[in-house]
Image (cartoon, rainbow, N blue to C red; front, side, top):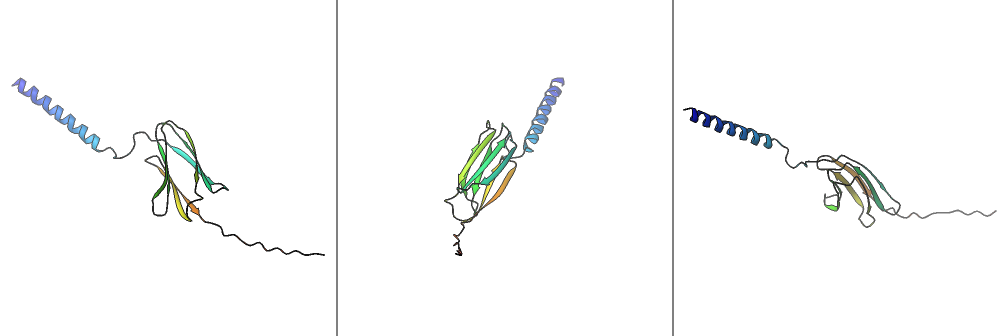
Length: 133
């Protein structure tokens, strides 16, 4: 009888432990990366029609920079690796049609979205008045 009780106790302990382990793993968030790198960004346009993106981040996680059009279609994607701490990107947007675009920078958990409006300026005729004394 003692052997049966010990065997039953061991079996119940193993079952209870495996049940708790299964429950603990089921509460983990799905699809989130293990290592998340915090980041800071700045973005500006240049006179040549290019967009300059500066990205500073921590090591240990990847950050992805995307350029999306109005329909949400990706035009440009650049991942920044785990070991890099700085990235400087220059995107030539002079060939893109006029419209509203979005620059999306994400580490998998936190996402920063900045709007980019492209509009071609129409040439303006300069009127000059010359007076002779």
